[in-house]
Length: 394
Image (cartoon, rainbow, N blue to C red; front, side, top):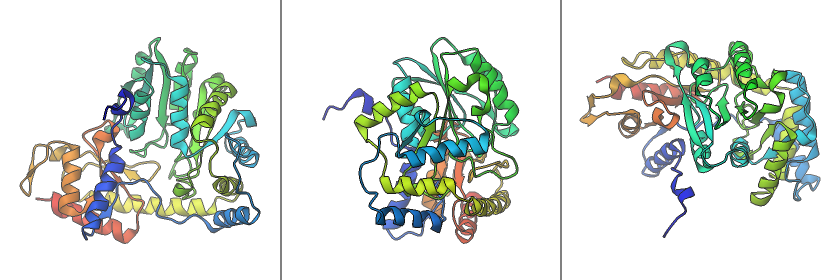
């Protein structure tokens, strides 16, 4: 069949691809440990599930407004005012089927053919696919592993051209777990303020999963208030991945266009999931903080265990639940008869020989790395580290 140029520009996500490969191995009876998907291994807190059950019992099962039920939009506005002292009105907020749909809505509404999208490295795998599908040209901004993946803001500023339309980043970062400080965000805001054609899309889906430092949002800088869209959701911080609720907050004109687009594609998000999400945002964060403490312990454990593998270089992530070690030491080597040329070869080797699934760094724009999720039980993580050490220490 002849397919459109648009769809032919899109490749399967390597995170999904590696998870699919792991499932294929499992279907063959192999004991695969999956460290590839970014999905909390915790259950959704009971009070959130109870809110969903109550919504079902109350008959809240009809179509919802495209941009979200008023109760959830109010909960989002209240959350932003509470956490960041930023006031948003209901027409500056909308709800989608996951944060991923929010970003795609924005790409489709903001990017013209040939517009440039500035994306700091490393980046979440879908950013480039979304930008390119929308006709954009990706311009990647380097970061340094030795400096905790610190963003080079001077290069960012030098990379801006009249065609630059969007700056898209996540903090905490997926895949590196790095975070932008208030000082870095302030400098970025100063740069963006000089270029009114630029919209900043700040993906803050991991905002609650931070360890030693406080999460900072670029939305706090008033001088670029009309140039920032925050993207967030309930999947990571509330262990609600399957509920598929994301949201964004930004200038009313942008939100209105995204609402129109979504109305023609998916309409409103799941009604029950929206009521559950409102309960999540309105309630105590104790379950989230308990999850964060466990993630922090796992981070330290995995850094210690994987640090025993010669050639695996690790930093200390500040948030999320990923390690993004540099593994270029293994490139050019032959392990168990397998020549390792790049991160894809290494991830496939670890899966096939060690039965542990990871994601190659090339998916995130940095081929010298692999991503390892520690959103898994301690027992599974210990076994995974043991297997990786066995197949890499040859």
